[in-house]
Length: 133
Image (tube, rainbow, N blue to C red; front, side, top):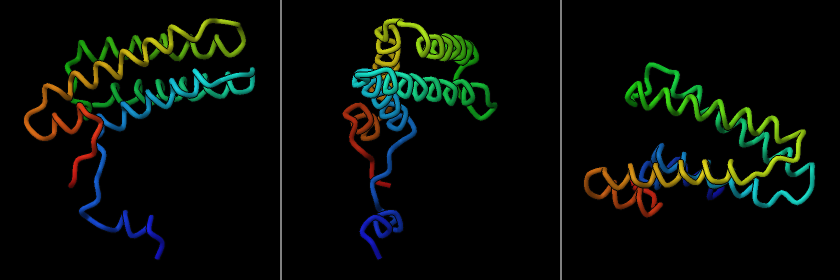
């Protein structure tokens, strides 16, 4: 059995929290946007960014999402802006800085939210560490 399969079959492996996954997703989106050095890479990175925000929009639209309704509305609005900007930037020479800033703002907000969590989970989430389950 490969090491990877054994890792996931082990119930004590380190699991990322949903918040950590979101932070990683925004960081990856920014890394792709920053690394795009030609038009094909730019379009690919913008498409990935658009997909990320589409997932965020879908999530805040579900009943299972426990965020306050006013925050969900603000995130939905931001999602629509980011998706539209990403799509338009695929065909126009728009600066990517606004997307980079909003994605980094999301990372900062998620980290701040993690810092308000009690105990060990807050420390692990704020540092980007994984929490053992």
